[in-house]
Length: 288
Image (tube, rainbow, N blue to C red):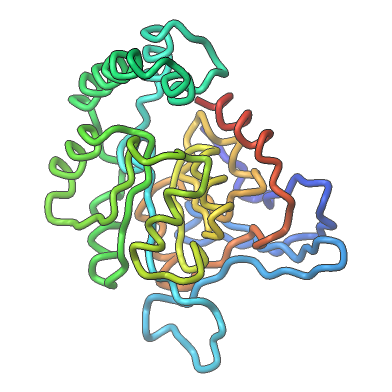
C-alpha cells in the first residue's frame, strides 16, 4: 500500500468552512498529520492538542491540555488484523452484512443468546492462537509506562483473546480498565471510553484522552467521547485516514512516541458537527 503523504488530509463535511490546511511530516516521514483552520458557521473551535510528554520540551505558558490516558482497541490495533473472523461469525450465525453481529445476538430470545455467543467465541478462540503483535507494540507500551500514562482497553472482543494477547506479548504492562464485549452498549457508542475516563476519576469525559484504533467504530466512539483519535492505518482501512473523526494517522504503533514527546496536534475540532448517530452506526456496520 502506498499512501500519498505529501497531500494534506481533507475534512469531508458540509457543516464546515475549511481553509487550506497546514501540514507537516513527523516521525521520519512515517507519521502524518494535518492541522486545519476550520470553523462551524458562527462558532470557532480548537483542534485537540496535548502538551509534550517530554518535560524538556514543555514551555512556560503552554495552554495545551495534559494527556491523562490512552485507550486502545485490540484486534487490528494491539495485534494484527484478523478480519476474516467476521465472515466466519456471520456464516455461523446465518446472517449477512451489514447486520451487526452483536446486535443480532442481543435481538435473539434470551434462551438462544448464549448458544449464539458461544459460536462467536469459538471462532475467536481459534483465531487467538495465531495472534501477532503489531509492530512497535512493546516499544510504545514501554514508553507510556516510563511516562506514567495510564492505559485502558475498549474492545468488542470477549475476554479470552484479550487476556491471551496481554499475557503473551505484554506480560508486565498494566491495562485498566479493560472494557470487553460484556459491556454495553459497544462501540461506536462512546459509553465504554467514558466509563474508562470515569474509572480514572476524570471529570471532563474523554477530553484528556486519546483513542487508538483501526476502525470507524473506534474513531467515532473516541470522537463522541470527546477524545482525540489515532488511526492505525492498513490496506483495508486507508479510507478512514480522511474521515472527519480521525485526528492523526500512524502506520506503526511506536510512531506515536515521537508525536507524544513533541506534543499531540490533532486535526479534528471538538464539537465541530452534529453527529448523525444512525449514519455512523450504518457506516460502522458496513466496515465489519
